[in-house]
Length: 416
Image (tube, rainbow, N blue to C red; front, side, top):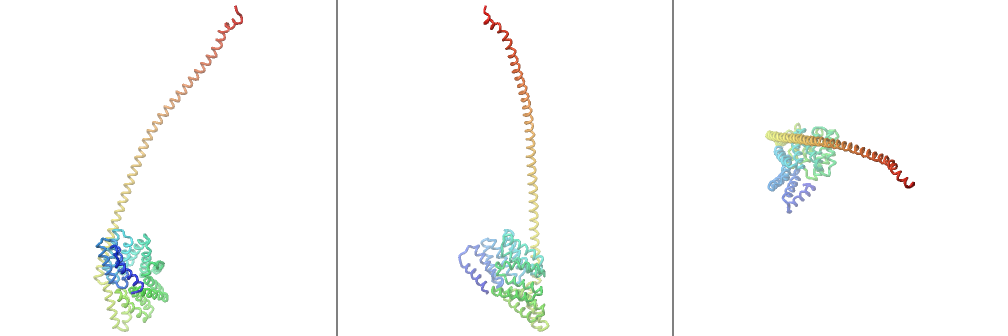
């Protein structure tokens, strides 16, 4: 076991010996199982099953989804694609029903990886991009880096090297979050440069990946890198180097029970030895045939097709349910809008009626004011006329008084 992994697994095992809440224990068991996925998938499955049993017992659905997905990942590494796909779909359903964002992304990713193993790359990309968007929605940096790595890997298989390089460079930028997966990042870099004809740079990344894998005890990825390097040397007609790397690929693949690495390397060896040593060629052919049957046997493919068909039907039901829900929302929106329109129309109608009544009152008040104003004016006119008449009468009265009083006043001057 590599130093880095040994340190982490020892820490996790120590935590299991301490008193823990049941939910924490589930997560610890699940993480411990995950750490064995590339070196001992059988141990990975055992720890995953313990986590799953406890999660079900305490009804911890997030832990259940995580445990199912981790067991599925280990089964995929062992070459049990039907079992892997079935478990990942179960995990995906739990995560979808409870809106566990990261667990949902894990399920999407790992279903996508099974499609990648089946070389259905377009569907694999769909699932991987969905996983990436889920991680981005919660800014989970490790998940984002892993999805870029898987997208780079898928585009490399499709020989879309510009897209592959773009995504693997994104993964490289997140190296600090995926140190345990760094051998895989270097493998994809190596494959891209190998396909671009840059042997030296490809070999640099292959060897870098192997060194990183040895530190982590990542036999699975080491097997895969040796198989890819063997393929590059074979294309370059460097048979001895191809054989040397392919033998290492079979050796590390068997140590990790990694059927895919065994298949690739043993197939190369059977073809290279075919014209040189038929007995050795037959030996490796049998190894390749057993690995291929384990991965892609008729029963497996039929089971996988059935699972895929059921999952596609389930996804269609989800989409139909979403569409029906959206239609209901639209209907509710239209009804709400219509209701608001009717309320506004009623308010406007009422306001208009009130306005009309107010206008009538104002008109009546204005008419009354006009009549009062006329009366006031008339009264003022009459009052002014009265004052004028009184003034004139006064002025007229004064001379008469003078005439009447004159004889009296004269008597004062002319007494009898």
